[in-house]
Image (cartoon, rainbow, N blue to C red):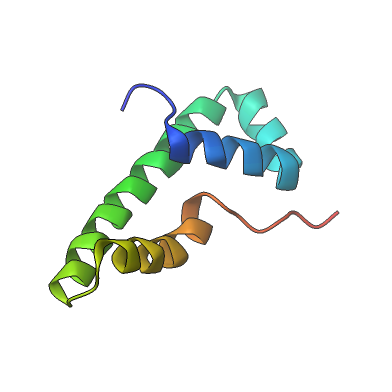
Length: 84
């Protein structure tokens, strides 16, 4: 993946609002874009695998997506807010 897609843009917006110290650190190191792309890629990969698994279990596409997103979103995209 070369650029930020929906997951990457969602991560950036969330991180800037809820994890500003982490974002500043990544920007200082010149690694923010890299970190966003990694979060995007890992989310997409895990989502794809979980969607396949849940579809095999008989869930509808909507159910599979909802369950997969619930399991993956806080691992890479919607990180917990920083404590001040």
